Every structure is written in structure tokens, then in C-alpha cells.
Length: 161
Image: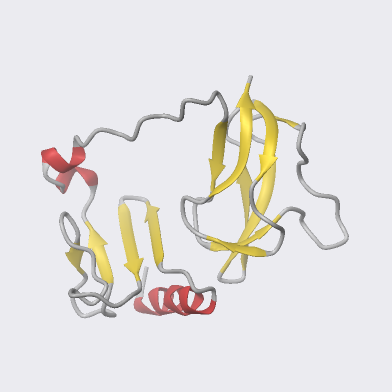
């Protein structure tokens, strides 16, 4: 990823009023965070400021380089409900259908499997198909069509089968 791509992501964050962005790809992870604070919006801890780049841009070393205590932190407890969530893997604009004239990919009650496309998220003029990645039945659609979404934001709830 070069500086031009990072600046484009920052512009997209400003345009959509997104305060935090995280991307992980082939052993590379970057986390961007906007906002005023004592550290200028930079993230502290296991993250390192990316030298020579835009303020607030941080480089996260591969998991093997993070201190074992941080890497071994316990995961959050799963929800008590049997429903699971399909979460956004990126920031962007959520679309329920491939085009305005087309039918939605899924509706409440639709059966999905791991390869079922449930929506599209547009990020930097690229349409990214989001798959269910599990087998089940859609129980809720949590985001309105054509609305901005953030990384990790729940998009759908489904009952596993």
C-alpha cells in the first residue's frame, strides 16, 4: 500500500464521517483513527506510528511480533442469543442489491450458505461483494440501503443451521 492509497482512504473517511478504519491484507495491517486527543488521534500500545506518513496513520506489526500478553488477550464473550451477525469487513457504503433496479441479494427469512452474497460495500469506487460465510437463515437486516458503514459494524443477523 502506498501513500496515495492511504490518502484516498483518509479522504473517504472524511467524506463519510468515519472515525476509525482498519485493513488487514497479506501480513500487512493498517489502522487509521481520526479525532483530537492528547496523542493527535494516534493509537498507542502494540501499534507503532508509521514513519514519514500522514499523522494518525499507524503500522501494526504481524501478530507474531506483538507481545505475547497482547496476542493472548481473551476474546469477547459470545452473545447469549443463538443468533450470529454478519459484520462489515471494511468501511464504505452498504448496498442491498447489485444495482438500483435489481432485487435485493437477501431478505429476512432467506436461507444462506457460506458462498451466498448478502450485500455489496462500495469502498473507493470498488464494489466489494460480502458473503454470508456461514449457513443459516437471515433474521434481521440492520443497515439501510445506501448508508455508510464502518469496519466491524453488524450488517445482518442470522440463525445458524
